[in-house]
Image (cartoon, rainbow, N blue to C red; front, side, top):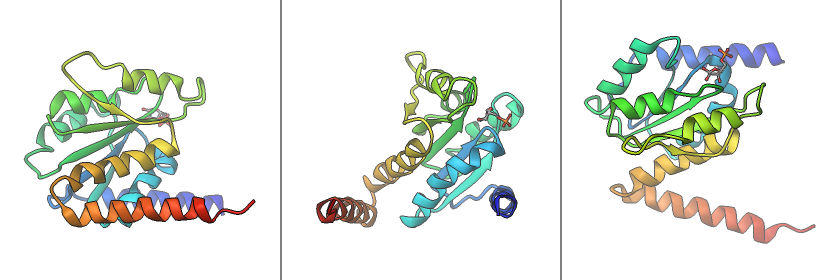
Length: 180
Ligand code: RP5
């Protein structure tokens, strides 16, 4: 079962990596394929809201030229938000922010060595002048980064704003209906 899921994850990343898609509004990038299990939740959330997006593996350290090229061309390709996830010495979001004025949302991955504290500090502690909006470690951060991206896009897209209101109302209904 785990093997099947892993194959599915690999295919999903391969498909999304095939071409740089010009029509995408959001890019979900991550430092390693090992981040996909967490970042698939950002992918799922954006899909739920019908937001055109691409998911790719780009490493600030292992593929620095690709990272630089991706960040520098993002605006011209029509992207409006970049979600960048990385773990450990997590520089991906910061490197993206260094190359673009688009909003960059960083998602720290839960690392084996320090449980994500390393990723969190590396992502959040940007020098003044190059902002990264950092979300929570792991899955909640992946989901919230996608919701934050939707909120940014919703500023100029009433249909997305409506969907966000509906999402919040459904969430509240669920809490109100919970019987213990
Ligand atoms: C980071 O190093 C990645 O974002 C990942 O979270 C971490 C470990 O990567 P792998 O060694 O699993 O490829 O660059």
